[in-house]
Image 1 (cartoon, rainbow, N blue to C red):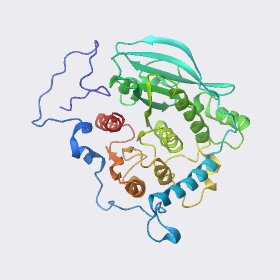
Image 2 (tube, rainbow, N blue to C red):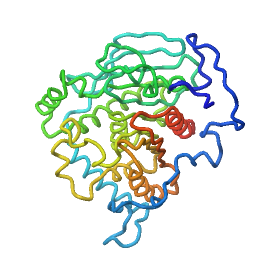
Image 3 (tube, one colour):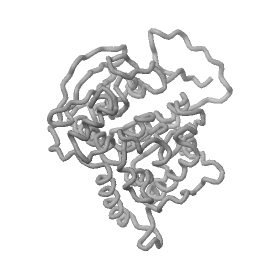
Image 4 (cartoon, helix red, strand yellow):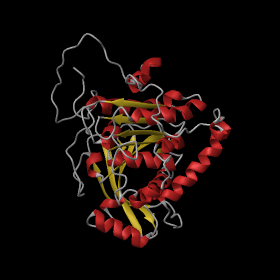
Length: 374
């Protein structure tokens, strides 16, 4: 038996569950986070023919005129150019940064955590919904925090909080899962659910309020405001901020981490790591702006911007398949410049878009491995 039920870790106690009875398979599984030098093996199962293969992606580490490899200092200069390129592609709202502020709508207690449904100020005249979840178990303060972006806060929490998007408690309830592990967790709704009654209205309002700003650019702005706020909380360690998401949430996790160096560890499930792997051309993501990007522009550049901070990709042969290794391999060349090639990894469960319990466990172990470090 795997000792795992849905998204609930084996040591979780609940008044709604009875005894779990399982038969040993003859081998004892240990947490990958505590498995010594072999912890990285599940994240590096490269299929035959893909080892070191970058699939024709433009090299991130090529030296001048494509000769040799840049030094870490040379990469720093290239990185600044990539930042400028992607900031231009995403656009900016051109707003003053508001002083970090949030107002509490309601507070509720569960068996093992306290939840605060709040509205975070992201613009001078606009507030976005967040759910802050603080475990009741004693915290080593300040504690790591894990951000979980999604359509609304309900599914990450596994709880009906009045939003328009709710799935039953399960493998997508990352905020609930992380608070069970003793982390502060915060779920955040994205603008597509709050700027209008549907995506067409949300994007129309975005264009009216912030001409030239893409949907993902709006998200990056909101994510930075959330990190600003988290850094003011005494219970949060601003040096240990993780982010994890699935599908839409994985896209948001990728872009937030690439844009904000304060995010220190990332796990992204089925984002479609290549620009052609998913619907980034839709008007609520990048829209027509994607056609303005050069042929060499792709998400391996965002992975390069994240390096050497830890990044894990989870695939299922849906949005992400074996071709995703091209992006991991390309970015790993940047990670290697800093002597941290194992800070990037990929696990493919090959069962479709929804992550498996094993994939969720590995994602949690990935975050634990890096966020528990001091």
